[in-house]
Length: 257
Image 1 (cartoon, helix red, strand yellow):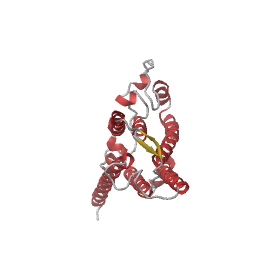
Image 2 (cartoon, one colour):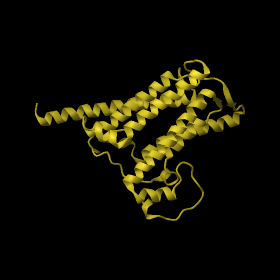
Image 3 (cartoon, one colour):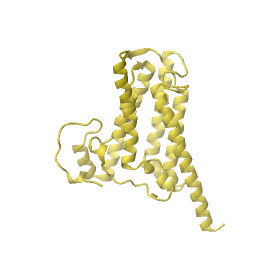
Image 4 (cartoon, one colour):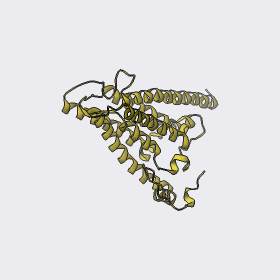
């Protein structure tokens, strides 16, 4: 087999793997939305396996921790440098997406529901507002991925041969001028906006929030190392998660494409 044929075969395999990884993510993440909202699916945060209160809390926190460990390790530059010694660089991001999808699916499959009610909103008008926030949170999350580079984030650019180096430009469009992490803002809104908050849902929302807040701190340290003063200026001018009415002075470092 010639080198040209080997390259074409590898490219076809990479593209196939990338698209399967992406489509699997779409299926699982859309299920995750229904899982969090406890709507339309057989297994959800409030309709899953059952156990004793103590064991259920431990298992649920352990599942979130397992998800967090997978994300943290595979997002680390040292791990990326190591894994790309054994696989082509364009496989790294789709592999991350695929294993993240598996970890999320496993979390939902093994989740333990705890149906003790912490709070419940009965007024219909208030329920509609809360469900509106729930939908808005997911919309913000998805919109934020497209505002930067959705296809890069989920590995499709890499397998299509348009982004081998894994480098994404530092841009601050739209929502990114309001908060530094709009994807996380959207996710936080979605997981907490629920009319009936059970202990099981509270454990999920609190543990995911804690993990993501810690993850943001590590990500920002990495971004400061990579981008230096440009990102530090961005930190000083734009809040992390909650938009503010406070006006900041114009900074050339934020005038990105």
